[in-house]
Image (cartoon, rainbow, N blue to C red):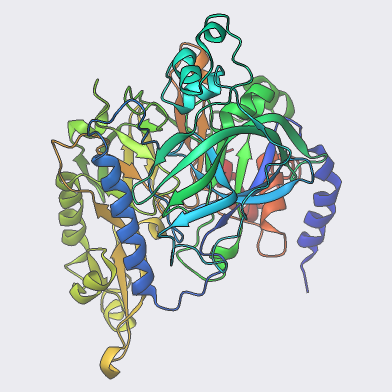
Length: 539
């Protein structure tokens, strides 16, 4: 039977649902593994580690010369490492589509009918990714060649060049009368795939609000052919064609800030099915103080680093990593981005594991091994099966001798004196391995950071913060401050662990927590519950 506290929560829940302000919008993110059955943990870890390495290495090696028409925009996306969101597009009737949410891309694109996907066998399974189906363009309008959106899709070529490519006559180009000529199709490359798309506009409908939010003239890429990319992408990068940028033109309050809180799952079948909240918008400082009083500065801020070569990436500087009480300084390449676009750490929603440069990774492994290795035997065979390491045996027979699994704290030190203490499950994963050839399975634990290698001549970012390490942390992308003196910034919340138990649905519960209604007004007497919730948003 539910506790009396639960009924209080439930009563307040329905009483406050209508108070969610129009300046905030909440959408569910679905993990691409949410509908999958993954019984072989080492195989799953091997697959996700390989994808993480491929995605990062593509990012590191993408600075080769390209023609001005070639546009390498994003990182490779693969089922099993990403989160999807759904909305509707069009008006006759609206068509529901599901796309990858990707902070490493700056455009929204989707498959359109007719659609041909080359070499897509084995990359798509209806059991793991909701099928968006090729879009019917009957209500969509081609974007003209003279538009700003067309220029952005073609790496900011001039509208005159683009209209000439679209076969607009010279006289019409000189008189700016090429409105009837469509934007030429553009090429878009990923790490293990590519596509050719054409820009269209239509109404975007976000049904999670009441009434539904409609963005007229929403611009998106329509792909009729793709290589190895069967699913579309909702780009959340810093370009003018990204979803937040287009939302900002409709509602600056909602579009200039967004955040997500990825549910802590550790590849657990049940946890991975829970939706993660994507929050568009945020209270202004004055409005928050008016509604909730002075709650202080609840986030650790780190400056956003400008990248002249890849301006759509969210790059931050990593100063050091602490393992236990020892602080390991990061190389200079991790702290800043140079004039050629090299260096810094990309905050990426589409890569599973964090990638560190070889020197820093080896220092972390050595210190980690010094702390853990004296108590636990190395599980080398597990490292070979998972692509992760170091791994150690942590079964009951070992733990009983030392009292507990001796895993040191791990802290990331970002620029701007921003310090994030990582939850242990974000960097040390325990599971059962073995059982082959009649052997008994043993419990092992692996460090969930990866070696990004050392490629001094390849350029690109020096490291990457993956979504596995972002679990349980509200990561807020503050885009509004780009317009003032302060630099852009990424905010790292302390911990968004759910504290109300399983009775309340996670999505609505987080909506109310984010709105601070229950926290500030009603949960103060429940000290134990509030401890978790206040950690959630740092009140």
